[in-house]
Length: 367
Ligand SMILES: NC(=O)c1ccc[n+]([C@@H]2O[C@H](COP(=O)([O-])OP(=O)(O)OC[C@H]3O[C@@H](n4cnc5c(N)ncnc54)[C@H](OP(=O)(O)O)[C@@H]3O)[C@@H](O)[C@H]2O)c1
Image 1: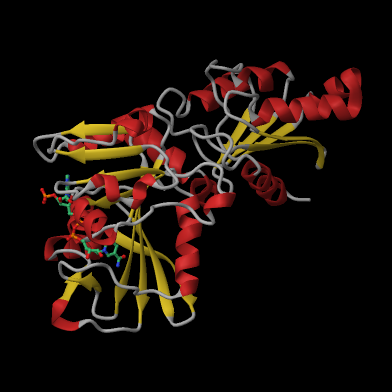
Image 2: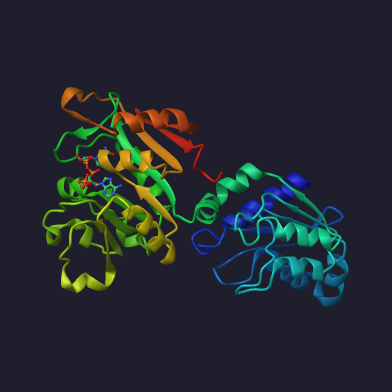
C-alpha cells in the first residue's frame, strides 16, 4: 500500500462518522510502520475520542501494551485534517501523537477552526515531527465542506436548490407550484434534504404550495430537518402542512406571529424590521447546532440569498418544458448576473430527461 492508499483510507474511515459527529468534522486516521498499517481509527461521535486517539487505542488493542509502544515510536500518522492542538472534551491530538513519539504526520488540510489553523502543525514540528500537508486535499475539503464553512464564516453551509424549465421558469406567477422535474430528480432532492439540517422557503411558497418540508420516507427518518420560513404574509398558519411531522420551525419576519399554542416550545420567531433577519437566523441556527441550510425558494428568496452572497452551492434541475411569458423566473436579473460571475460548475448529472447541474460559489465557498 502507498501513501495515497493510506490517505484515501483515512477518508473512508472518516465517512463512518457521518451524521454522528456534527458540529465536529469527520476525521479518519491510519498509523503505519514500515509501510504496514498498525492502527486505524475515526471520530465516532461528537464529544468522544478523536480519530488519532482511536487509532492509537486500536494499535494498543491489536498488539498489546509493550509491542504497540515499540511500534508507535517512529510511526507515521495519516489523517484527513490537521491534528487538533486544543483540549476540549478530549485531549489535544497533537499531545497524543507527540506522546507516542511518532516520526511523521501526513495530513490533507489545515483545520479551518481559527483556534487551531496551523497551530497543530507548528506544535508537531516544534516537537521534531515531520509534517506534510496537502495529500488528497480536494476530497478532504469536499468531505468536510459544512464544517469548513461553519468555521470560516461562522454561518451554516448554504445550498440553494430549484427546478426550472428550459426557459428558466420555476413556476407560474402568483400561482400554486407546478411539477417541473421528474420522479428521479425528486428522489435526488430527498437525498439532498437528508444532507442538510434545515430547509428554508419564502412566505409566498409557504402560502401557495403549503409544503411539508420533510425528508422522506418520513417513517424512516429519525431526525427531520428544521423548517425555516422567511418573509411576510404567511396566510393561516394553523392550516399549514409544516406542522405535520413536526421538527423545529423558525419564522423570520417583520410580522408579529400568532403560532398555535401547543407548538410554542418548538417554534422560534425571529422578528426583524429590516432585512437583517438572515444574520440573526444564522446565529440562532449555529447556536442550536443546525449547521446547514437547503434553500428551496421561490424567486424572491433565491434572488435575495444570491445577492447577499449567502450560498456555497447552487443545484439546478432543468426539465424539458417551456412555460413562456406567464412563467416566474428563478431569480431577478441582478442575481442572474452574479451567478454568471461567481459560480463554477462542479458536476453535471442526468436523471432521465432532466439535467442536474451543481455549481460552487467561488467567492463564498470554503472549499
Ligand atoms: N420550481 C421550484 O424549484 C420552486 C421552489 C420554490 C418555490 N417555487 C415557486 O416560487 C413561487 C414563490 O416565489 P416568490 O418569489 O413569489 O416568493 P418567495 O420567495 O417564496 O417568498 C417571498 C417572501 O420572501 C421574503 N424575503 C425575500 N428575501 C428576504 C430576506 N432577505 N429577508 C427576509 N425576507 C425575505 C419576501 O419579503 P418581502 O415581502 O418583504 O419582499 C416575501 O415575503 C411560488 O409560485 C412557488 O411555487 C418554485
